[in-house]
Length: 185
Image (cartoon, rainbow, N blue to C red):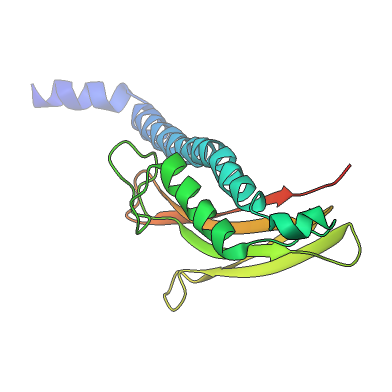
Protein backbone atom coordinates (compact mmCIF):
# COMPACT_ATOMS: atom_id res chain seq x y z
CA UNK A 1 0.00 0.00 0.00
CA UNK A 2 2.80 2.33 0.88
CA UNK A 3 4.64 1.54 -2.34
CA UNK A 4 1.49 2.32 -4.35
CA UNK A 5 1.10 5.72 -2.63
CA UNK A 6 4.75 6.49 -3.27
CA UNK A 7 4.30 5.53 -6.90
CA UNK A 8 1.32 7.90 -7.24
CA UNK A 9 3.28 10.77 -5.70
CA UNK A 10 6.29 9.97 -7.85
CA UNK A 11 4.19 10.31 -11.02
CA UNK A 12 2.81 13.72 -9.99
CA UNK A 13 5.23 16.22 -11.50
CA UNK A 14 4.92 19.90 -10.53
CA UNK A 15 1.65 19.71 -8.59
CA UNK A 16 3.29 21.04 -5.41
CA UNK A 17 4.71 23.92 -7.40
CA UNK A 18 1.31 24.69 -8.85
CA UNK A 19 -0.21 24.68 -5.38
CA UNK A 20 2.47 27.04 -4.05
CA UNK A 21 2.13 29.40 -7.02
CA UNK A 22 -1.65 29.37 -6.58
CA UNK A 23 -1.34 30.26 -2.89
CA UNK A 24 1.20 32.97 -3.70
CA UNK A 25 -1.15 34.38 -6.32
CA UNK A 26 -4.06 34.43 -3.87
CA UNK A 27 -1.95 36.17 -1.22
CA UNK A 28 -0.83 38.78 -3.75
CA UNK A 29 -4.42 39.37 -4.86
CA UNK A 30 -5.54 39.78 -1.22
CA UNK A 31 -2.71 42.24 -0.56
CA UNK A 32 -3.62 44.31 -3.63
CA UNK A 33 -7.29 44.22 -2.61
CA UNK A 34 -6.47 45.59 0.88
CA UNK A 35 -4.36 48.41 -0.60
CA UNK A 36 -7.08 49.26 -3.13
CA UNK A 37 -9.76 49.18 -0.42
CA UNK A 38 -7.73 51.53 1.82
CA UNK A 39 -7.24 53.92 -1.10
CA UNK A 40 -10.98 53.85 -1.92
CA UNK A 41 -11.94 54.51 1.71
CA UNK A 42 -9.47 57.40 1.93
CA UNK A 43 -10.79 58.89 -1.30
CA UNK A 44 -14.38 58.45 -0.12
CA UNK A 45 -13.60 60.17 3.17
CA UNK A 46 -11.86 63.07 1.45
CA UNK A 47 -14.66 63.50 -1.09
CA UNK A 48 -17.24 63.51 1.69
CA UNK A 49 -15.32 65.88 4.00
CA UNK A 50 -13.96 68.44 1.52
CA UNK A 51 -17.32 70.07 0.61
CA UNK A 52 -18.24 70.27 4.30
CA UNK A 53 -14.92 71.95 5.07
CA UNK A 54 -15.52 74.35 2.16
CA UNK A 55 -18.90 75.33 3.66
CA UNK A 56 -17.32 76.06 7.03
CA UNK A 57 -14.64 78.25 5.40
CA UNK A 58 -17.32 80.01 3.35
CA UNK A 59 -19.31 80.73 6.53
CA UNK A 60 -16.20 82.32 8.06
CA UNK A 61 -15.64 84.45 4.94
CA UNK A 62 -19.11 86.02 5.23
CA UNK A 63 -18.32 87.70 8.55
CA UNK A 64 -17.23 91.14 7.42
CA UNK A 65 -17.62 94.40 9.35
CA UNK A 66 -20.69 96.12 7.81
CA UNK A 67 -19.47 99.64 8.61
CA UNK A 68 -16.23 99.05 6.72
CA UNK A 69 -18.07 97.38 3.83
CA UNK A 70 -20.26 100.50 3.53
CA UNK A 71 -17.06 102.47 2.93
CA UNK A 72 -15.89 99.99 0.28
CA UNK A 73 -13.32 98.24 2.45
CA UNK A 74 -13.21 94.56 3.24
CA UNK A 75 -12.44 94.03 6.91
CA UNK A 76 -13.23 90.75 8.57
CA UNK A 77 -14.61 90.25 12.01
CA UNK A 78 -12.10 87.46 12.59
CA UNK A 79 -13.47 86.49 16.02
CA UNK A 80 -16.99 85.99 14.66
CA UNK A 81 -15.59 84.31 11.53
CA UNK A 82 -13.56 81.86 13.62
CA UNK A 83 -16.60 81.09 15.76
CA UNK A 84 -18.73 80.51 12.64
CA UNK A 85 -16.05 78.30 11.08
CA UNK A 86 -15.96 76.00 14.10
CA UNK A 87 -19.76 76.05 14.49
CA UNK A 88 -20.29 74.98 10.86
CA UNK A 89 -17.48 72.43 11.11
CA UNK A 90 -19.17 70.91 14.17
CA UNK A 91 -22.63 70.89 12.58
CA UNK A 92 -21.56 69.56 9.18
CA UNK A 93 -19.15 66.88 10.40
CA UNK A 94 -21.26 65.96 13.48
CA UNK A 95 -18.64 66.89 16.06
CA UNK A 96 -18.80 67.78 19.75
CA UNK A 97 -17.56 71.13 21.03
CA UNK A 98 -14.07 69.62 21.46
CA UNK A 99 -14.22 68.34 17.83
CA UNK A 100 -14.58 64.67 18.77
CA UNK A 101 -16.92 62.81 16.40
CA UNK A 102 -20.47 62.20 17.58
CA UNK A 103 -22.62 59.17 16.80
CA UNK A 104 -23.36 59.18 13.07
CA UNK A 105 -20.24 61.10 12.02
CA UNK A 106 -18.23 59.59 9.18
CA UNK A 107 -15.00 60.61 10.96
CA UNK A 108 -13.29 58.21 13.35
CA UNK A 109 -10.98 60.71 15.04
CA UNK A 110 -11.16 64.42 15.82
CA UNK A 111 -9.94 66.66 12.99
CA UNK A 112 -7.00 68.96 13.73
CA UNK A 113 -7.29 72.54 12.43
CA UNK A 114 -3.71 73.60 11.68
CA UNK A 115 -4.45 76.96 10.06
CA UNK A 116 -7.46 79.25 9.84
CA UNK A 117 -6.32 82.48 8.27
CA UNK A 118 -8.05 85.60 6.99
CA UNK A 119 -5.81 86.66 4.09
CA UNK A 120 -5.62 89.96 2.27
CA UNK A 121 -2.85 90.86 -0.15
CA UNK A 122 -1.92 94.03 -2.02
CA UNK A 123 -1.93 92.14 -5.35
CA UNK A 124 -3.78 89.11 -6.71
CA UNK A 125 -3.44 86.28 -7.65
CA UNK A 126 -1.44 85.49 -4.56
CA UNK A 127 0.21 82.13 -3.89
CA UNK A 128 -0.01 81.10 -0.25
CA UNK A 129 2.35 78.39 0.97
CA UNK A 130 2.11 76.70 4.35
CA UNK A 131 3.85 73.69 5.85
CA UNK A 132 1.97 71.36 8.18
CA UNK A 133 3.64 68.77 10.39
CA UNK A 134 1.41 65.86 11.40
CA UNK A 135 2.05 63.52 14.33
CA UNK A 136 4.63 65.95 15.72
CA UNK A 137 7.17 64.42 18.08
CA UNK A 138 6.40 60.81 17.21
CA UNK A 139 8.02 58.22 14.97
CA UNK A 140 5.20 58.86 12.45
CA UNK A 141 6.03 62.58 12.08
CA UNK A 142 5.38 63.74 8.52
CA UNK A 143 5.61 67.16 6.91
CA UNK A 144 3.05 68.14 4.28
CA UNK A 145 3.25 71.25 2.10
CA UNK A 146 0.10 73.09 1.11
CA UNK A 147 0.12 75.62 -1.72
CA UNK A 148 -3.04 77.47 -2.77
CA UNK A 149 -3.61 80.35 -5.16
CA UNK A 150 -6.05 82.98 -3.96
CA UNK A 151 -7.70 85.49 -6.27
CA UNK A 152 -9.08 87.93 -3.74
CA UNK A 153 -9.40 88.39 0.00
CA UNK A 154 -9.85 84.88 1.31
CA UNK A 155 -10.28 82.64 4.30
CA UNK A 156 -7.91 79.67 4.21
CA UNK A 157 -8.41 76.61 6.38
CA UNK A 158 -5.97 73.70 6.57
CA UNK A 159 -7.29 70.65 8.43
CA UNK A 160 -5.80 67.25 9.18
CA UNK A 161 -8.00 64.15 9.25
CA UNK A 162 -6.88 60.67 10.26
CA UNK A 163 -8.22 57.84 8.12
CA UNK A 164 -8.03 54.33 9.64
CA UNK A 165 -6.39 51.71 7.45
CA UNK A 166 -7.79 48.20 6.97
CA UNK A 167 -5.44 45.53 8.19
CA UNK A 168 -3.14 47.99 9.98
CA UNK A 169 -3.24 49.29 13.53
CA UNK A 170 -2.45 52.84 12.46
CA UNK A 171 -4.27 55.60 10.64
CA UNK A 172 -3.13 57.69 7.70
CA UNK A 173 -3.13 61.50 8.10
CA UNK A 174 -4.87 63.39 5.29
CA UNK A 175 -4.37 67.15 4.99
CA UNK A 176 -7.19 69.09 3.31
CA UNK A 177 -7.19 72.79 2.47
CA UNK A 178 -10.14 75.03 1.78
CA UNK A 179 -10.18 78.52 0.31
CA UNK A 180 -13.22 80.78 0.44
CA UNK A 181 -12.56 83.88 -1.64
CA UNK A 182 -14.45 87.13 -1.51
CA UNK A 183 -14.43 88.65 -4.98
CA UNK A 184 -16.21 91.85 -5.81
CA UNK A 185 -17.48 91.84 -9.40
